[in-house]
Figure (cartoon, rainbow, N blue to C red):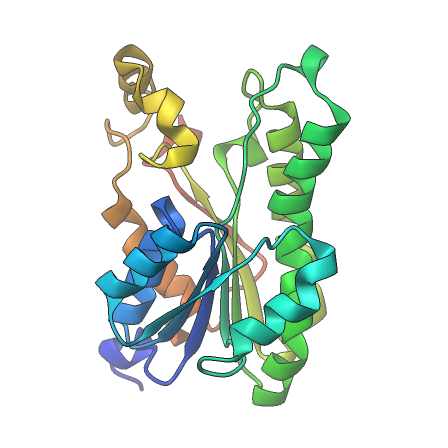
Length: 253
């Protein structure tokens, strides 16, 4: 039987994290590097990526790119492979929420949301699955949401994309888990990130959200470390196709 520390070790693994310039993506890169992985951080903001890599140290590299741009996908994947090799672990943390009311949703806003939140995780994963199959080991972690199952005001495009993520995760598991590749999703509650800045700037709204959890508070970035490491390591070898809600019990009430 493997020791608990061995189960959670990522020594020798290569991880790629999208949306790693800030928030939960940045935290994911720090966590996986701390567990021994070499990490490739991907986002559009070079300065923020450089700073994240400086904070992480020698285990980190970065690629500036737009994961939603299908025309750049081949070049992006080559750049991701360059520092350490093809990734064993993919964490799809990049996302956008236009917060357009249903009556005001534009085709541009809809397409941008679905492209980044739903299409990009699939096509980036598809590009690296052949190399994961060769190794017989891979971990894909998508980012779901409270809106994967709940309808929020001005969230119709975002909710559609995150509802899709839950089904995409199950479909990835069905397709690729026979080859040693698990696919799971994390569904964050309310965490202080750039994407939720509007929520946390409203003290009353943040307090109401905290009161709706079973635990009685909103999330901190550190609350994501354990669940993410579990899904990226051998500790979750028999877990696939699942959405793990890390929401303080928000969806349980």
